[in-house]
Length: 138
Ligand code: TYD
Image 1 (spheres, rainbow, N blue to C red):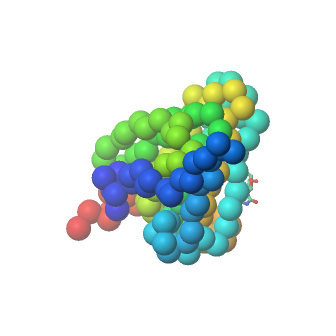
Image 2: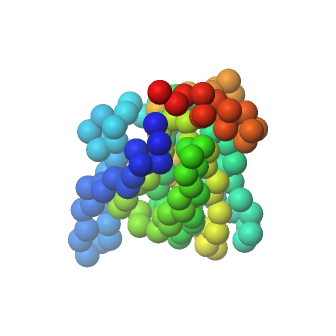
Image 3: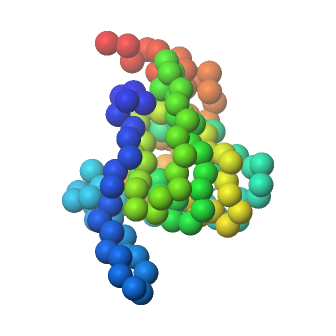
């Protein structure tokens, strides 16, 4: 897995005079079974979230309100993307170190996740992540 495998997914959006409705169905619009949903909200200006990698977890991040940046790192390359469109989700595959920053005031980051919460799936230490990512060289 590399950051090239992490990309935006356009979600179906039904817009009319009453506003917009965006749909995200597991295995249809989102390329995994959705086992868990959580969201980040009330992030103070200047605060960063994330700062970890996952061994197997797949996630779709959606800026349902406001905007924030995701910095993705696969151990070889880094890229920064801005999430600001509630109709587009950012797919993050396993073995990607991610940092979320530059949250706008009132931003909400919705996360759809492929697995239940399991601390054993985390790399919380960047050097351990880097060693594991480099060992996966084919
Ligand atoms: P943390 O991993 O620090 O958040 P971030 O994604 O910004 O790195 O999680 C904060 C707390 O929430 C931590 O005590 C673990 C807990 N948590 C759960 O209990 N369930 C979950 O699904 C998640 C994502 C976190």
